[in-house]
Image (cartoon, rainbow, N blue to C red; front, side):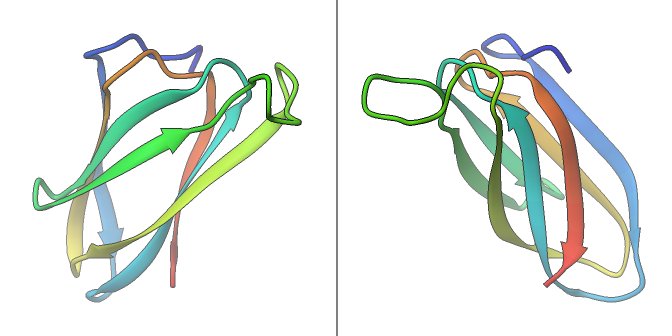
Amino acid sequence: IQGMTEGSELVFGDIMLPGDGRCVLRIDYSAGPTGTAEVLVNSEEAVNAKLNGIGLWRKAKEGDELAWEALVSMHRGCNTVRLRAKTTLPPIRSIQITKA
């Protein structure tokens, strides 16, 4: 995804899990200007994501591969994850969910 503008939303529905539990939600992205987003799981749990990018005090260079992770609660059966951009986000390469 070539970045997201402020106010845009990306929705992943029909994420099926065999049981309730904590999961690691990982966003892989390319370094660019720092962006912030809200991650909502099943419209219940909101997590703020700061996708750090390039800057005067950071070693990352534009285009470097970076990642952000958080622990989230998911339910047995169908789950939905929403990524809402609070500011412009750097290019997102992938979003992964794994059992914690």
